[in-house]
Image 1 (cartoon, one colour):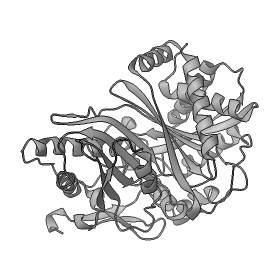
Image 2 (image 1 turned 135 degrees about the vertical axis):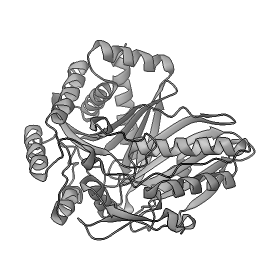
Image 3 (image 1 turned 120 degrees about the horizontal axis):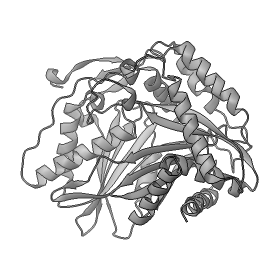
Image 4 (image 1 turned 45 degrees about the vertical axis):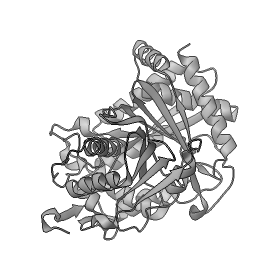
Amino acid sequence: MNEDHMDSGRRLSFFESTLQQANLELFSSTIYCWARGTGPVELDHVRSAMELMHRAHPLLRSRIDGPPGEFRFVTDVPFNDVPLDMVEIAPDADINSIIEPWMNDPFSGKAYTWAGRFIRESGTQRWWLAVATHHSITDGHAALSLLDQCGRLLGEMVEGRTPTVPDFPMPDPIEHQLDPPGSMEHWTRIGEGWAERIGEISHWPINESAEFKDRRCCNTYRVHDEAFSRRLVDRCHEERTTVQGALASAVVMGISEHLGHAIDIDTITPVDLRRFSDLDIHPDEIACKVMCIDTGSFGISQDSDPWEVARAYTSAIEQQLQEAYYPPLDFTSDDITSSTGGWLTSDGRHTHGFALTNTGLLRIKGNYGPVQFEEVDVTAAVRFGGFPVLLSVYTYRNRLRCTYTWTEPILSHADALSLADAVEERLAQMIR
């Protein structure tokens, strides 16, 4: 590798380290992001765009080395070691037939932190560009930014121009960009306090047990038109809550309906911490700058007021953030190894309710002249029995998109689709 693109690397932060630990032990913590595009793009264009990105962003050039608590990014990965392949599919093929097997090839133990796939629809100029990234180097915001930057480069290449990408420095961990900085004592105290407040969640039986290596990720998608998306935003404003709160309410009540009884349940919510920093964080920086917050909903039944549930969820998130519940600067190897302990076994139930991530109104526009991204999706690999469903929500080109990801056979295909339908029906009822 060119010495100009060698960085000294750095130690992984607390949350980055927990994601690496999950990658090693749970075969999870990989972000998958893809766009359905049009335009005269070839595999060589994609390879050139990825190489430019690889040279510009230190974490894309990184592998992760060292033991828990001392994980380090080592920025010596040559671009030729980054996997990139092309798959050709029929015009009527289901993209999930390509994406899902890819999601079930874990990053665990790999000497790279990202990969690409170019999926071309035979006989047309329609295609998908997909990128997989280790969660330690991206969150949803950064993965979509990576896709957006690749789209810009593809557009310029197709126009015959020679694009460039400025070199970025090694990103600082978000833990070093917050004031006040987090401490392990404060992190543990606040986390344990909320865990005690949430208490025992309602029993959610698994459909079938399976070892991690035999589990697989599956997806289904729901896309709402512009009119529905606008009504939802307007109603959320009227009800003094957020789209994320409305989705959380719909999921909780959908689960209650699916199980047929009232429930106490918790929600794991990734929160983007960039907005809490006073520093100027470049929007195109490739890094993971989130943390996960656990909140609870109690005594929820089909007769609950959905907007009260939404407001309670939003208030709980805000309260934890007001408590400066930030990941710690200093931590030990035991802190990292214990972070995944509760996810390693499945005793006939899920240990959490569900995970909900809302990337919001996407900054990505998908308009690159002769190259267009008509749709985009983002989700993450989950293979543990911790929660039945990961719901990834975002608004692209004024349309609300919901991606449901679950782990089979822990949750069966039929039950997952039934649950997604129940959530979607609850959401529709909230704005009628």
